[in-house]
Length: 339
Image (cartoon, rainbow, N blue to C red; front, side, top):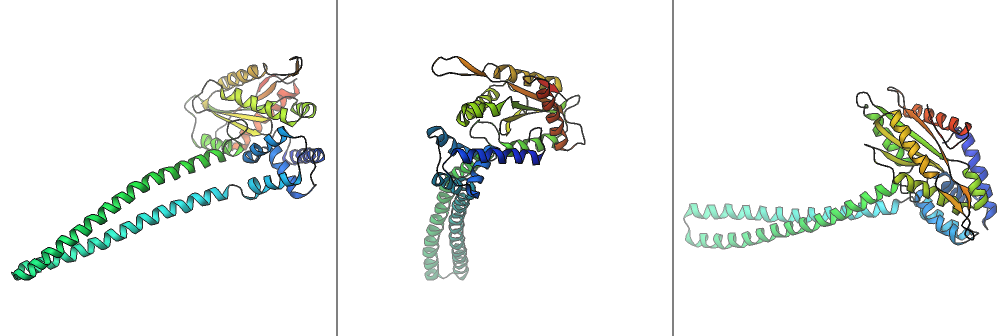
C-alpha cells in the first residue's frame, strides 16, 4: 500500500485515474474508471499486459478499446478458461467410467458363463458341455476385448489429463505472476508471505521482508509518459530477477511502483545486503534522449527492511517494513533503512 493508509492511497489512485481519463478519448463512466483503476493499482496483470501495447502504439485510447479490455479482463476474470478445463476433465473421466462399466458388464457375463460351464461339467452332459465351452470361449473374447479397450482408454486419457494438468498449472502461474515484470503479483506475494510465516524460522534466523519503491516515480510518468514509466517498472523487475539466489527467496510486485522481497529464515544483515544489491544495480539505470543519448533522468530506489517477530501477524511485518521505507524516503531517498 505504500506509506499512506488505504483511504489516502485510494484517493491518490482516483486522482490519477481522472488524469488518465482526460488524456484519452473516453467517457468518464464506470467501465473507463474500472479499466484505468485496475491497471494503475497493479491488481490485474492480464489487463495491464493487454493495455500497455495499446498505450505504446497510440496516444489516445477510445471507448471501444476500453470496453473490449473490460469485457476480456475484468468481466470475464479468466473464468472461461477454468470452466473449459473443468469441462474437458469431466469428459475424460466420463469416458473412463463408461469403459470401466462396459468391462464390468463383460466380467459379469463371463462369470455367469463360468457358472454354466461348471454346472455342465458336474452334470457330465457332453452336449451341454460343448455348448457351454463355446459360450465361455466367446465370453472370454468379449472380456479380453473390453479389458483391452479399457486399458487403451486409460492410456490415452492419461496423456489428455497430463495436458489438462499443465493447463491448470499454467493458469495458476499466470494468476499469481505480474505480466509486466515477470515476478509475483500481489496475490502471489500474499500467498508466499502466509507460507513463510506459517513455518517458524530456523534457530538463530529471522523471516525478513524488503519493500522497495522507485523514487520520484510520479515525476517519471508526468514528464515522460506512462509507457516510459512501465519500462522503468519492467527494468526494476529485470534487476530483481538477476538477484543472486537466497534460500526460499520470493520476488514480487507489491503494487504500482513498489516491489517486495521475502527472505525466509534469513537475517536483517542479509536482507540489507540484498536490498543494497538491488539499489546499486538500479542506480545504473538512466533515461536517455533518443537524439543525443544524453542521460536525462537517473532512476533510484529506496528500501525498507524488517524482520518478523514471532506471534505477530503479517500486517505487523509489512507495517514495520513500510515504516522503514518511509524513513528512507524522508532521509533523502536512494538508501536502505532497517526497522
